Amino acid sequence: MKRILLGSTTLAGVAALTGAAQASDGVKLDIGGFFQTVYQGVFDKKSEGHFGNHRNTDKLAHNAEVWFKGETTLDNGLTVGARIELEGETAGDQIDKSFVYWSGGFGKVQIGSQDGPIGGYCILPPGATANFSAFSPDDWGSNDPIGSNSACTDVLGNSQSIVYSTPNFSGFQLIVAYTPSNNAEDYTQDGVNGPGTPRNPDGTAHHSFAAYALYNYAGDGWGIDWGGGGSWQAKFNGTDGGNDGKSQAYQTGLNVTFGNFGIGAVTEYFNTGGDDNNAWVAGGGVSYGIDAWTVGLQGSHGHYDGAGPALDFTSNPGGSRNLDRVILTGNYAVGPGVDLDAELGYTWFKDSGDAADSNTDKYEAVSVAIGSTLRF
Image 1 (cartoon, rainbow, N blue to C red):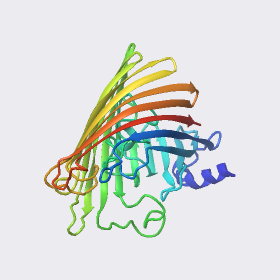
Image 2: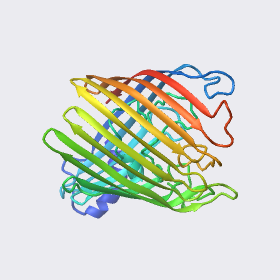
Image 3: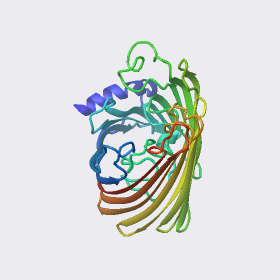
Image 4: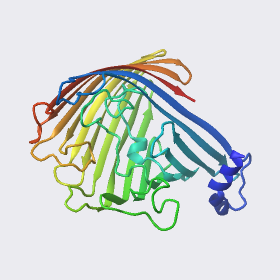
């Protein structure tokens, strides 16, 4: 019944376009997902006024998702399908992504709620695991006010968009995207699955677009992976008296592998709307794998002119904030789809803004964690 429903709803428009072309075997439904668990300890100052005050020393956390994909290849070679990603935790946005796609010799077109080109295809350096990273992992081992040094963020978000990926030409591929409104992601918002068009209240961007290029080369015992691009907000409804405006983001990353050894670097610049709101993140990492074991080392530095993370629209006049993190990671592949990982991390933060005081201008934390990942 599920196969019939999925095929009849998501592929109805495709049938009108393809005429007599029919699927040889019908729509095939695949189900997959992952479940990640972490036990983590964060050791920082718990005294009054510090960021660690009234914070627990340890925690248990998990991140889970189940995805459903219906796909078929028609007799004319056109592949059509749809994918829905369901979050495993109770949240306001229970459906993480939901889109339909068409692919063939022309490339691939995806329409729906999905990542932008930077968020979905960006290159990050080696040394991370499924749970732990020096950039924007599932579990950031620190109570600092920034939260993480994200180097895979675009200005499109997960709103309803169209994404086109070209075929791979000798290792090169281009991904472009357009988002009519950044305030149109789920079915609770006007114009997503109802009458009219999306609302654009104050503080909302619209007519956003992005482009990201990829290149990969596999030589004899070595290889290169590169990515680079940007995303732009063409329109922005400003807030009266607020410090916001149109934003842009530019990102690039390069990884090189030699046998079981990998090394790479990444940087992203955020030209955030408003005054004194720009930010940039840079870092690198290395990894080495032998049999089922992989060890890694990563580091990141984030410089924020605003008081919050990139695209936060909160100014911090008279100074800036800097966040650094270094982690040592280990990963053991227990079996197909089952990994155990661990981290030892050190994070330090400094605020040079006029509003900083002796308790919040500096922060340090050590984190120790173990985790597991199941993919199905």
